[in-house]
Image 1 (cartoon, rainbow, N blue to C red):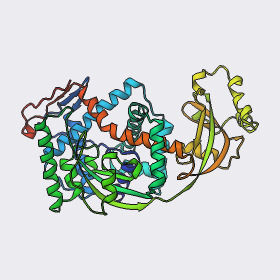
Image 2 (cartoon, rainbow, N blue to C red):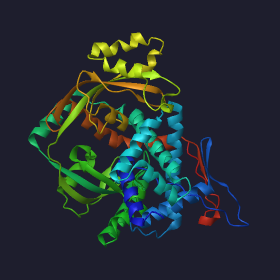
Image 3 (spheres, rainbow, N blue to C red):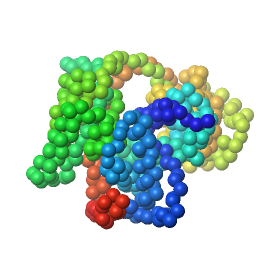
Image 4 (tube, rainbow, N blue to C red):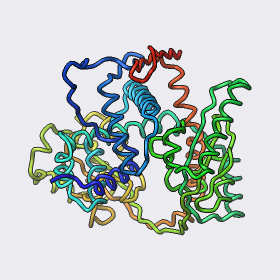
Length: 450
């Protein structure tokens, strides 16, 4: 039994939407008499092998074919895939230097969520992926881990560094009171990059390229196929699909243009500090108001090497949790277990979270727990975790905490605009040597970027 094309495609689309995952790698046997491997790129101290590139190109071809995107120029696709692999290497190097980590329980929560959305158990998902390719489930987990690491890196390097002033918040709230936009927009995006301090000649060349792309689209060529072939944006290999965005999340330089488009309509060429853009409005829908339930949680970790090996928490530990009837009782755990390093539970106040925001194990643990009570302890790779539910509340996302929401929205908008620039600088600061070789009619192409 193998995965149907429909199932594989729907799973891929879901994974791309939730975690922006790359395709799962597969392995190909080298032909007899063929050079087993060689280096096609060095990225600082790391290397990318031809076999790795070939695997990613093959998987990208499959995924594009599943979306009915035809590849006219394989060499061009290979360049785009290699460029993405280089950016992934650079980001992983940065992740390692910053000490950023993703715990196994976070990956498991994401896997469980994906399985649930596909009406599967985790075991059924594992079996299907392993039938699809050798070690398919393991590759799937590692891709999820990688993309979660990328998200954390973006949080640390871009979002956390983005500042919003009080005046910006006041102006935003004032505009929102005058302009009530209750729509979300599904956006397709094609970008032609401009280098930093671009010369007039470089600007002219980039604009001409954008005009050529726009002409192809106006002549009826498929937007996603054109995006794959020509776009230099981060979503190029996903057909330029930015997903569903609210007005607040759309980059400032094309917000008003998106709002003016009809579904299916193309924009003209949009100039920004980082390049030229072409937008297509793929869809539009009401977002409406939504009441959500939030939980104020506290967490205490009891370190243990064998917690996950036990079928159930120790009886004494369950009794300890059952006797917690207040936040004061919960905080006494720090004194009771003073031998645990303070850093382990330094961030025990998890704040207000929705069920969707918290790991699945946490959501399961607090199900049915009343405020001012602790949940039954559960095992993780670190040890036993006790969650204390301090309170619950219902919030209207479109009405409550408007000032805080305004600040977060403005930070996200600024971060979205800064992300492309940050990636470019990360690449500019790297030492990259590319050698795709004669199979692409490229004789020892090299690019040293310092």
